[in-house]
Length: 303
Image 1 (cartoon, rainbow, N blue to C red):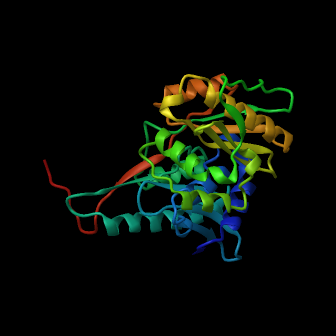
Image 2: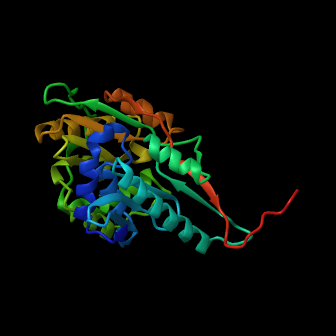
């Protein structure tokens, strides 16, 4: 078993190939890959690894920078589990190298782990199922099944224009103040092979971008993912986020999408209500796994 730093496109091809096995319950959609890789510029391409068998066939993918969640996509079968085992060895060792005797590291793996063999592997290594997670919601879409978007006077629902990048970035950072998107990062995102300007939809006013929804289409499987969507605080409660989502879903259906996917932190009930208002229903509430990693030679104190 070997691992390599892949090109973005080879990672996307593997995720697309694995999607039919689990559908909306899958660990990753190509939208997760695109947003996760490019929105934090400089890009996180070096966090991607493909784990291949001796014949050179990819059996697993990890997206892990040594902190947070180790995203793990595994091909079903014994070779996939063998690759996952090696990937977990590597991830745990990476955590041991950063932990200290006073500060162990919490390693989180996956977000919707459900394959029996992978669950058994994680549990055998001391991982425990997390109590919180990121549920997946989905809906079918056709060109005539989506409610017409409506926005108050003074707002225009349309594609993002090239000269609006600074305003688009400002709107995202206002909606998600814990993040720090940059114009350079957004330009990198737009250069991604999966980016489609038609699916970068905004609610715009004469003074800038008020709300936004960026969608990513897996053309092979006909599944489009919303990642991200949001609204500036001063423009909330006007129906703008729903409007940009509905418009983006309509254009996605025209491009061939038959299913839409969105995910939200399970404690964010407002987000769930928004997506329900856009026709989504919960498809998967499974969570990932976690394990406390101790530094090499660290002996816990006895009570």
